[in-house]
Length: 142
Image 1 (cartoon, rainbow, N blue to C red):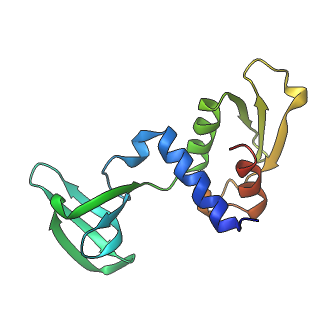
Image 2 (cartoon, rainbow, N blue to C red):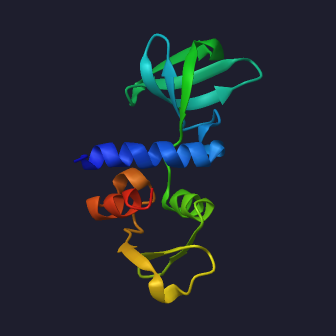
């Protein structure tokens, strides 16, 4: 049985693979560097090959390096909207209500009466901040 953290990691990896724009080098994107491990990009200047990033999210200790220091671009944190786009690409019809219910139907042409749903906390835009119930819901749709 997988933990919620393992399920979140699997969902996040699948979302990033289906939405390549999340893996483009940009501000707030996570990278793996050769000397400092996992870091978050705070500033990116591809023209001058400079990247400013934080080490372990400690924003007071900045490092400035050339982009050659980047081992791998891990990607941005997926949001609720990214989750909806991901489900749409997986052939689910999705709808998010104003009350925070996310409906998903297998196949875009099926009637909504066969929808499954789960509550989403609309005050938390990032997937990583959502409830265990929502993570389990998405993991079941992998």
